[in-house]
Image 1 (cartoon, rainbow, N blue to C red):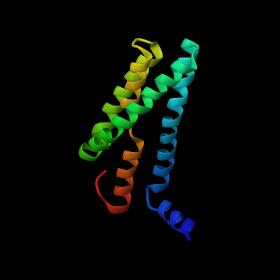
Image 2 (image 1 turned 120 degrees about the vertical axis):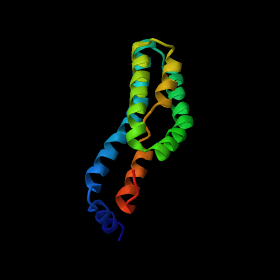
Image 3 (image 1 turned 135 degrees about the vertical axis):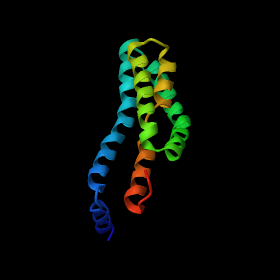
Length: 133
């Protein structure tokens, strides 16, 4: 019975709190794209511009995400997450303030987006197999 297996998984020490945190963390990805649409449309009045910037965000995330995931695998979360968060905060600040063209800022936001899935995979491995995360 699949639900019984899932219940057993969540009873693993530390898994319940981690699972909830990982779920909440993943909401940011979906909300970032929507927030970019609203921000750019409010600034320019154009949904075409908003779509272009959101597309730059998505493409940059798709290209940089696997590379950031490799860095997490190689150096661990405690070394990569602070750097990624600082870079992402700076990129978001550039987008919000309009200091650089919106498409460039959108691409920077996407390229620096913390890869919650890679962090989660490492944590599950540590919880279930005892490997270092």
